[in-house]
Image (cartoon, rainbow, N blue to C red; front, side, top):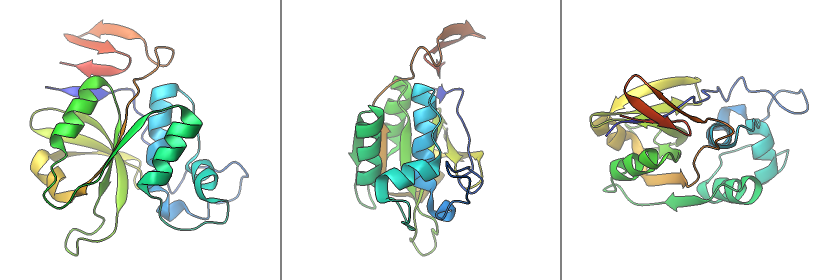
Length: 191
């Protein structure tokens, strides 16, 4: 099975703008809001800045990490994007969850370890493509894609913590085309 959510916005949390024109007070910690912003843009076509999402969740002066309950509440309540949150332990495998969600055209935000050697820190990234051997994440720290083996993915994903955005891309944002042997419906290429 091969699926890719396209076109996907690969944004950098450290260079994202703000609504007030001032530098973001939380840019170094805005991976969760940036991951949510990328999912919102992909699904709805609406572009929101990570700083706006963080301010709506915690207030303008908040500096710190975001968490799954706040991200889900924002996506559900403010964006009409139903979510399903997952939390497991060190033995929880997310590959089947990711493959199923991407096959449905649903974005998945996964929490990864920041430091694998210490099993510490956290970093939210949307997973935007997969096949039988690999997965691809959009890394909001760099604004670039990273393709990993499933083994590497399972080592770095943090204890089965993920958010499945259970809504497909709007036809107004994508449409349906057939090209190069792949069927694309609502921005999901299934080969």
